[in-house]
Image (tube, rainbow, N blue to C red; front, side):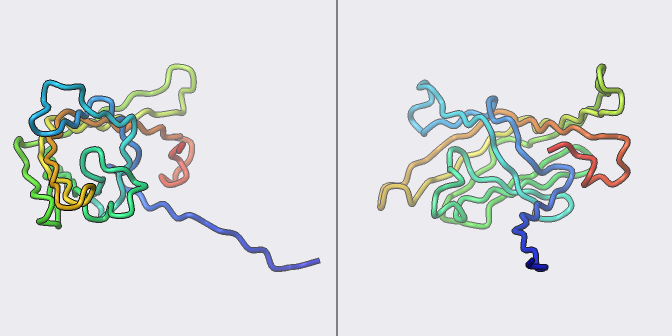
Length: 167
Protein backbone atom coordinates (compact mmCIF):
# COMPACT_ATOMS: atom_id res chain seq x y z
CA UNK A 1 0.00 0.00 0.00
CA UNK A 2 1.38 3.39 -1.01
CA UNK A 3 1.66 5.66 1.99
CA UNK A 4 2.25 8.78 -0.09
CA UNK A 5 -0.90 10.62 -0.91
CA UNK A 6 -0.80 13.40 -3.44
CA UNK A 7 -3.38 16.11 -3.85
CA UNK A 8 -3.73 19.06 -6.13
CA UNK A 9 -5.01 22.03 -4.19
CA UNK A 10 -6.33 25.26 -5.55
CA UNK A 11 -5.59 28.02 -3.12
CA UNK A 12 -8.16 30.76 -3.45
CA UNK A 13 -7.13 33.89 -1.53
CA UNK A 14 -10.01 36.22 -0.72
CA UNK A 15 -10.83 39.52 0.92
CA UNK A 16 -14.13 41.27 1.73
CA UNK A 17 -14.49 42.41 -1.90
CA UNK A 18 -13.40 39.38 -3.96
CA UNK A 19 -15.53 36.67 -5.47
CA UNK A 20 -18.09 36.18 -8.21
CA UNK A 21 -20.16 39.28 -8.87
CA UNK A 22 -23.47 39.23 -10.69
CA UNK A 23 -22.78 41.12 -13.92
CA UNK A 24 -26.36 41.36 -15.19
CA UNK A 25 -26.52 45.10 -14.39
CA UNK A 26 -23.13 45.94 -15.95
CA UNK A 27 -23.55 46.89 -19.61
CA UNK A 28 -20.72 46.91 -22.17
CA UNK A 29 -21.29 48.77 -25.43
CA UNK A 30 -19.03 49.38 -28.39
CA UNK A 31 -18.41 53.08 -28.99
CA UNK A 32 -20.77 54.32 -31.70
CA UNK A 33 -23.18 51.46 -30.98
CA UNK A 34 -24.64 52.83 -27.75
CA UNK A 35 -28.23 52.27 -28.93
CA UNK A 36 -27.59 48.61 -29.77
CA UNK A 37 -28.06 45.70 -27.39
CA UNK A 38 -25.22 45.74 -24.84
CA UNK A 39 -22.98 42.82 -23.98
CA UNK A 40 -23.78 41.48 -20.51
CA UNK A 41 -21.79 38.84 -18.64
CA UNK A 42 -23.83 36.94 -16.07
CA UNK A 43 -20.84 36.58 -13.76
CA UNK A 44 -17.71 38.65 -13.28
CA UNK A 45 -14.98 37.11 -11.17
CA UNK A 46 -12.72 39.34 -9.12
CA UNK A 47 -9.34 38.33 -7.73
CA UNK A 48 -7.47 39.54 -4.64
CA UNK A 49 -4.61 42.02 -5.00
CA UNK A 50 -4.37 43.11 -1.36
CA UNK A 51 -6.68 43.63 1.62
CA UNK A 52 -8.64 46.46 -0.05
CA UNK A 53 -8.07 45.83 -3.77
CA UNK A 54 -9.32 43.31 -6.32
CA UNK A 55 -8.96 43.06 -10.06
CA UNK A 56 -11.29 41.88 -12.81
CA UNK A 57 -11.07 41.94 -16.58
CA UNK A 58 -12.39 44.97 -18.49
CA UNK A 59 -15.82 44.89 -20.06
CA UNK A 60 -16.41 41.81 -22.15
CA UNK A 61 -12.85 40.43 -21.91
CA UNK A 62 -13.22 36.73 -21.26
CA UNK A 63 -11.09 34.87 -18.72
CA UNK A 64 -10.27 32.34 -21.43
CA UNK A 65 -8.52 34.93 -23.62
CA UNK A 66 -4.78 34.36 -23.82
CA UNK A 67 -4.10 38.13 -23.63
CA UNK A 68 -6.43 38.81 -20.67
CA UNK A 69 -3.52 40.06 -18.52
CA UNK A 70 -3.51 43.22 -20.66
CA UNK A 71 -7.03 44.11 -19.54
CA UNK A 72 -6.89 44.03 -15.73
CA UNK A 73 -8.99 46.67 -14.00
CA UNK A 74 -8.08 47.25 -10.36
CA UNK A 75 -10.78 48.31 -7.88
CA UNK A 76 -9.65 49.75 -4.55
CA UNK A 77 -12.26 50.04 -1.78
CA UNK A 78 -12.02 52.64 0.98
CA UNK A 79 -13.60 52.58 4.43
CA UNK A 80 -15.61 55.68 3.43
CA UNK A 81 -17.54 53.78 0.73
CA UNK A 82 -15.72 54.88 -2.41
CA UNK A 83 -14.22 52.65 -5.09
CA UNK A 84 -11.41 53.83 -7.36
CA UNK A 85 -10.64 52.07 -10.63
CA UNK A 86 -7.34 51.98 -12.48
CA UNK A 87 -5.40 50.01 -15.05
CA UNK A 88 -1.65 49.47 -15.19
CA UNK A 89 -1.69 49.14 -19.01
CA UNK A 90 -1.71 52.49 -20.85
CA UNK A 91 -2.46 50.70 -24.14
CA UNK A 92 -6.09 50.12 -23.16
CA UNK A 93 -6.58 53.90 -22.80
CA UNK A 94 -8.59 53.39 -19.61
CA UNK A 95 -10.78 56.35 -18.60
CA UNK A 96 -13.10 56.59 -15.57
CA UNK A 97 -16.15 58.80 -16.23
CA UNK A 98 -17.80 58.77 -12.77
CA UNK A 99 -16.86 58.30 -9.15
CA UNK A 100 -18.01 54.85 -8.01
CA UNK A 101 -19.16 53.88 -4.55
CA UNK A 102 -20.17 50.71 -2.76
CA UNK A 103 -22.67 49.60 -0.15
CA UNK A 104 -22.63 46.54 2.03
CA UNK A 105 -25.71 45.05 3.68
CA UNK A 106 -26.40 41.94 5.72
CA UNK A 107 -29.41 39.88 6.77
CA UNK A 108 -29.89 36.63 8.65
CA UNK A 109 -31.49 33.74 6.79
CA UNK A 110 -35.13 33.22 7.78
CA UNK A 111 -34.95 29.42 7.46
CA UNK A 112 -31.42 28.77 8.70
CA UNK A 113 -30.86 31.31 11.53
CA UNK A 114 -27.11 30.58 11.70
CA UNK A 115 -26.62 31.73 8.09
CA UNK A 116 -25.79 35.37 7.41
CA UNK A 117 -26.23 36.80 3.92
CA UNK A 118 -23.92 39.64 2.90
CA UNK A 119 -24.32 41.74 -0.24
CA UNK A 120 -21.75 44.14 -1.62
CA UNK A 121 -22.90 46.37 -4.47
CA UNK A 122 -20.58 48.59 -6.50
CA UNK A 123 -22.62 51.52 -7.86
CA UNK A 124 -21.97 54.09 -10.62
CA UNK A 125 -19.43 52.04 -12.54
CA UNK A 126 -18.70 54.06 -15.68
CA UNK A 127 -15.47 53.60 -17.62
CA UNK A 128 -14.10 53.25 -21.14
CA UNK A 129 -11.32 51.10 -22.52
CA UNK A 130 -9.83 50.04 -25.85
CA UNK A 131 -9.48 46.44 -26.93
CA UNK A 132 -6.33 46.72 -29.01
CA UNK A 133 -5.47 43.03 -29.43
CA UNK A 134 -8.66 41.26 -30.56
CA UNK A 135 -8.30 42.39 -34.16
CA UNK A 136 -4.71 43.34 -35.10
CA UNK A 137 -4.35 47.05 -35.96
CA UNK A 138 -8.07 47.70 -35.29
CA UNK A 139 -8.60 49.22 -31.83
CA UNK A 140 -12.18 48.82 -30.55
CA UNK A 141 -13.40 51.30 -27.95
CA UNK A 142 -15.91 50.16 -25.33
CA UNK A 143 -18.05 51.96 -22.76
CA UNK A 144 -18.93 50.05 -19.60
CA UNK A 145 -21.59 51.29 -17.15
CA UNK A 146 -23.79 49.91 -14.40
CA UNK A 147 -23.33 48.06 -11.14
CA UNK A 148 -22.01 44.78 -9.77
CA UNK A 149 -23.31 42.77 -6.81
CA UNK A 150 -21.42 40.20 -4.76
CA UNK A 151 -23.43 37.82 -2.60
CA UNK A 152 -21.82 35.86 0.19
CA UNK A 153 -23.27 33.36 2.67
CA UNK A 154 -21.56 33.08 6.05
CA UNK A 155 -22.12 30.31 8.57
CA UNK A 156 -21.99 32.16 11.90
CA UNK A 157 -21.40 28.91 13.81
CA UNK A 158 -17.92 28.62 12.32
CA UNK A 159 -15.40 31.08 13.84
CA UNK A 160 -12.80 31.02 11.04
CA UNK A 161 -14.06 33.26 8.25
CA UNK A 162 -12.33 31.30 5.50
CA UNK A 163 -14.21 28.19 6.66
CA UNK A 164 -17.48 30.03 7.35
CA UNK A 165 -18.02 31.19 3.77
CA UNK A 166 -20.27 28.89 1.82
CA UNK A 167 -18.69 29.08 -1.62
